Image 1 (cartoon, rainbow, N blue to C red):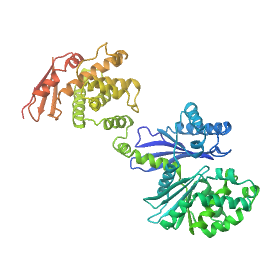
Image 2: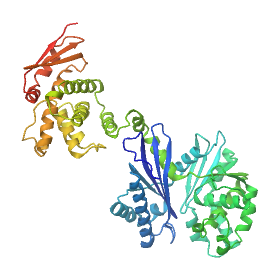
Image 3: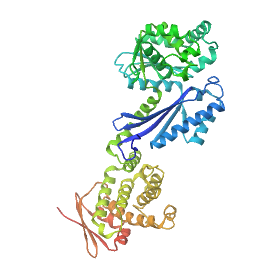
Image 4: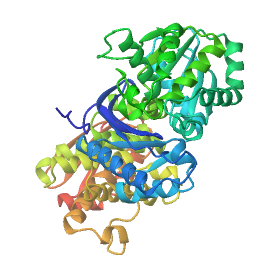
Length: 521
């Protein structure tokens, strides 16, 4: 059953896509204000971009398969009304001479922008995911993620990274370069081991320096090895392989038998994903080399990997923005608040102006034809009316118009954004004129609302002319004129002057003159 959409709810829904060498993975999650997340759905597609070797041109067939997979991910993401898609590509796309062509096709045909990340960032994302999924404590672990094009090595405990490395020894690459026989020959195994020895000298030295007692395997190859060993031991891992642990002796016993199998026999091995049958051998040889070279006796399994790392990185980078989710669960108000924060808004003054404007709107409700929706737009215009100071004091009202129109506000229709922006623009200086291009292009209903709401905002802004929230209380009386009585902290003359000099639109709206009278306390 599909979860409810995230709009207006105290969470943000994102889709994370890991474009690996052999397979593409997508996961859709709901992220909550406290930084936790919950999986909504997931999808995996076998693509095998590196079928002809990693570093070579991607074939048209594999690119077509990749685009088809992304279209499925996009359809799934759209069906859940995801707020954002983050797509990271690894070595197959990063190294291919025509990888840029695939990235451009994804933009043109699927409207997904792919970021090709360096191997060291891939390692960091994987490490974050493992720290999130396993209980490592203060114990250091070697995290190994065997991909198709590259393999990542991380030394980490629950909180810290001590070593990060990415080597171009993924199973697709190694299979293409070294394995031609079926079953794999002893000569080919020796050639693989010699290559691993040459490429992993720094990894082995780091393990010696840090005295690491456990290896943590993550992603497809390592999870398949764990599943096959669990099946051999007749253990039930139907719920999850996460935290599943086995010994180096368990692995060596499995390895001795498995490397003797041809493709047909490998396919009969319980726990093996048939889609990995052609690449798994190179990964098994790599794990064998690591365990023999380091003496590590324990192997654990993590079911979280790079795609979860993408989510965790997003949470870390958007920490301040996510905190707004709990304070502002409504999409529209949260979007306005994000804009205010980005523009270093004058919070106390703008809040005071909004408070006064809304009271005027409410107290004079029987004398204008504005709606509750218009009231909300007035509130947002009042809160944002001075954000133009973020660019310059001079013409800050015009800068506010520009910032609001270009802020990509969420939850608003275009006509509403135009009203907010123009009402904010007309809080000072000139009233709306036909010669003003941004105003002139609007429809008659928008123009009417802007004149009315600006009339209220201009008086409200004037009543905080000092920017020190001098007005503590106001009351409004209507007869043949509108009388606003104000109680102030200090001398009221500046606020009265500020409001009266900008009262032209207000008096036209209510068809009455305005007077402002201070009340002594």
